[in-house]
Image 1 (cartoon, rainbow, N blue to C red):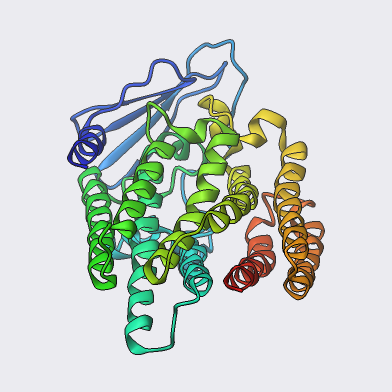
Image 2 (cartoon, one colour):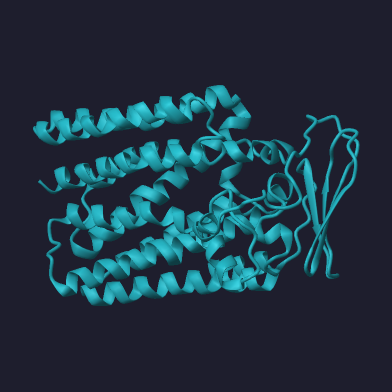
Length: 387
């Protein structure tokens, strides 16, 4: 564990020099940070922010021509609610605590919180007593604000060169928050999440610290997803499945381990559901196509094109759920299978209404309308596994 933390610290605090990517980033000790992007016949672009100055320079290359259409400032009329939730369309903010909250992307917490609920329900041992409720809330805090916040912050840190192309007004590339402040936030959230995991194991009387091991494993997975040299997100299939497993399987396992025992069939079932999580993860790749392509990241929209990738996305979600419904039916649980099918239908409707029309323009509307049915379907599966 010590070696892992030391590795995270040394890499976070180092200056990064990338020579094998289409986009090269050099961080210097002065007050300016220079992003150099090799682009064919494009001009130099400079944008300033308090305390930092970012320069995007051009250079000759034989790679694909990529031009950033991102403005230097956040779009006019940005929403303060979007800023607090950490989603696009956010207003620019100078309050450091609001910026810190934005980096944790609270909009991504609910699936993790819900995963804990599903795990607790699947255990069959959760009771509506003050003690069990308190345990579950603490587990939700570990999974959501702490470890998901850590994941999102570290992802934004390692995506700062991509964001300098796609969204230069985001907190880190714009200089609204300093390097040291970001590093401090990463450590506070990581250690806070691991500390809560240890407390939960003691509270549950575990002889083996199962929840702590899950928290360590999830944190390590989050790190190698975003950080070089592995940077799993560079590979669309592996990276998105890892992200799906983090959002569905890990919180479920934590909730079930807290109140009961993990069983092999539940592990298999949740990993299967992680394929649906792969589809959810692809949704977030469409808005970063330009920067991913410029920096050589093989997200699925880059590798297959947006038209093919959007069908892969909805296919992964729908086929997974239909397979789970078939599994429940074959297991002698027809009512749960029918309930799951009833929740799949509105998801498909919203896929055609929003996502398949324009996955970039309607991504927020699609996620807000369709994903509640997905998480309810996961809960139905959890209840079925309990019985």
